[in-house]
Picture 1 (tube, rainbow, N blue to C red):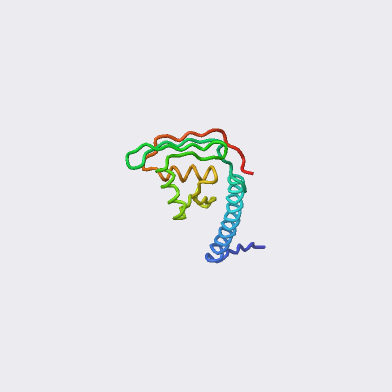
Picture 2 (picture 1 turned 90 degrees about the vertical axis):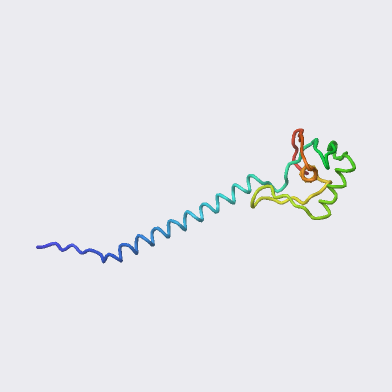
Length: 136
């Protein structure tokens, strides 16, 4: 009795390996998409947190400007407020991270106001933050 060893045609073996590799790549891609989606969900809750108080110090046209957000009220130099209002009127937006939430420039919401005021300055000298709180 002789045993005959049949060898698959060379192309058949490569085809199976390719199909297995493609299937594995698809599984990995799907798993990575799920992980990325979950990480975005965990990092960017539906409601962002906001600072209770912040201070922005900077300069516009070489002149010192300052803004303070405290107790849901913004107090700042007229020059800084005017420049910030222009950014709001132009529809400036802030993308916190690629694929993350986008905040519209505003002087009404603490986080957006802070970013708007920072962008309005020619030079930013300091930004000080107090503890954060959940929006609500």
